[in-house]
Image (cartoon, rainbow, N blue to C red; front, side, top):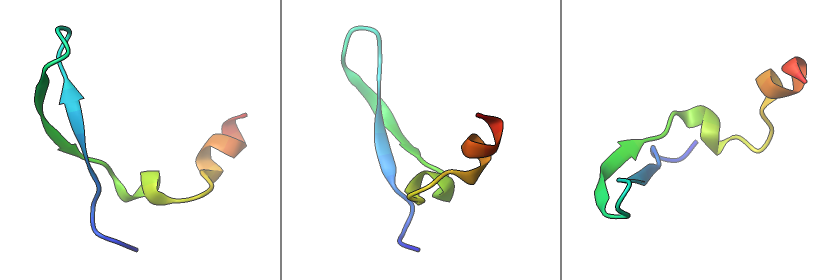
Length: 38
């Protein structure tokens, strides 16, 4: 799998506050854990 993906975090006023790293599960095409809960 590729490197961790970073996404911006925005405040209520629309300004960028920083970056957070997403867990690797967000890079999968299908989320089996969500399908089981549905």
